Amino acid sequence: MKKHIPNTITCLNLISGCIATYWAFEGHFPMALLFIVIGAVFDFFDGMTARLLHVSSPIGKELDSLADDITFGFAPSAMIYKYLDLQLCPLVLDAPWMTEHSFVPYLAFIMAAFSALRLAKFNLDERQAMGFIGLPTPANALFWGALFVGGADFLYSLSFSAWYVLIGMFISCYLLVSEIPMFALKFKTWGWKGNEIKYIFLITCIPLLLLLGVLGLAAIIAWYVILSAIVALKSNT
Image 1 (spheres, rainbow, N blue to C red):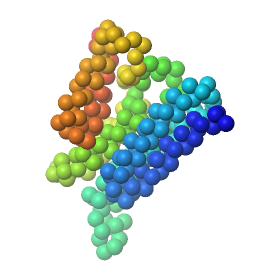
Image 2 (tube, one colour; image 1 turned 90 degrees about the vertical axis):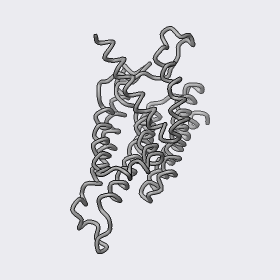
Image 3 (cartoon, helix red, strand yellow; image 1 turned 180 degrees about the vertical axis):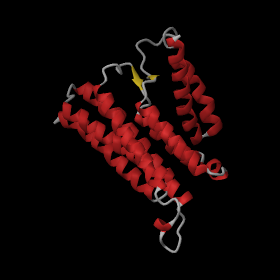
Image 4 (tube, helix red, strand yellow; image 1 turned 180 degrees about the horizontal axis):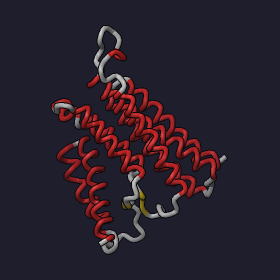
């Protein structure tokens, strides 16, 4: 019986991603973000449960990647699609497909494909035991969800905001499959030495959340990428 518990939790992650996708297509981004966060919680506990119960299995690994691509790949892509559709393709005589930029919103689903590629690479890459190579899909999904929820007023105030979102999406696609080393919040010891970057990151997250609220979550992901890139550059010099 216990061998089914981790896979059940993984399926709850997948279901959360399906619900998030539904709300994204409905244009209700706060609910979409909520279910992405719920999916992230299930994603955290399924692996932990498998390790605690000693029931890790190949099927669990494959199921986890499938669930993650729905929750952290397809759901945020659906949010981008809906935003681009609202911005670029308003109804024209009840025929939105007749508008000039009607094909552009569909480009959003390229990110779902890159998320799947990133997850496949993660499953095969043995270098990612204590860190990541490329941007993790949950971080990418949380960035876009928080941006659309917390930064809605900011986005709508920008001219050509849809094109900025599209450019940002392609940057996300690159980061997902890039060879940039990114640190994970895993601690072998709790001391300062050897964990400086992790503690600096955690400390700086607090004012970002306090000052920016939900948008602070997007800022934290951006800061995580920047800090990881700085560390990678320093280690190569």
